[in-house]
View 1 (cartoon, rainbow, N blue to C red):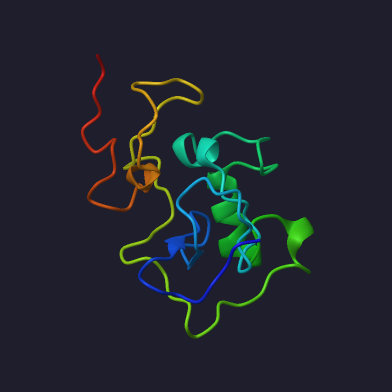
View 2 (view 1 turned 135 degrees about the horizontal axis):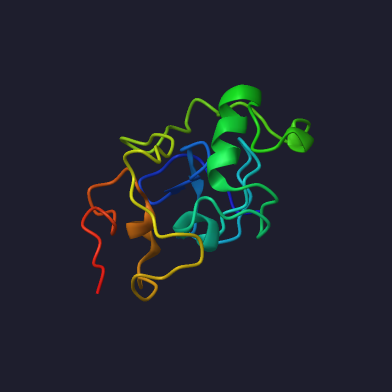
Length: 133
């Protein structure tokens, strides 16, 4: 499990938003705050369930808001974020009425080299202006 204190080089958990990962998106690291496994497939297709995580990212976010864990079965494995762990600036849960994602397992374009463009809350989100060619 790769976790650390919130430092500028840390990366956010897409489920809870806390800067806990030391590796770039898709690291397969487990978030100590919500117990989400960092899965690039589920970051790209947030309605996809059954990959590294049993539930989709959208469902995990709803679970975290309601229960404090990405899934109910992980309630004994999570913890409250530490004071040194902040959320990624501008982080928010996915809003399917606002955020544009490809249909599950449909590819509008090849995988990006830098997976941080899959962060929907950032100005560099690759689907702000999707290319449909």
